[in-house]
Length: 71
Image (cartoon, one colour):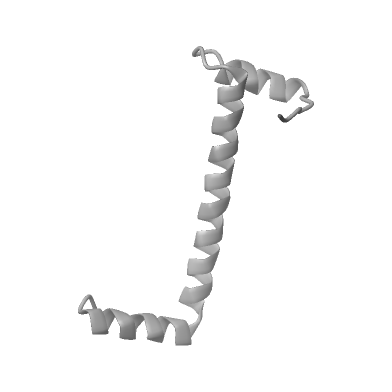
């Protein structure tokens, strides 16, 4: 069980997210999963940017791609 204190902005958001008949629980679960996916995507982007900026990593990736016949 999780208790959350909401403010006016959160109340408006919950009202909008439940306007289609979903329960508050369903809306909050969906919002949490969405936020988690966004965090994972942001981390993946940061990792990709880091690898792209590292010449050694880029060379290793190219070598693996050539070995696999995809480069």
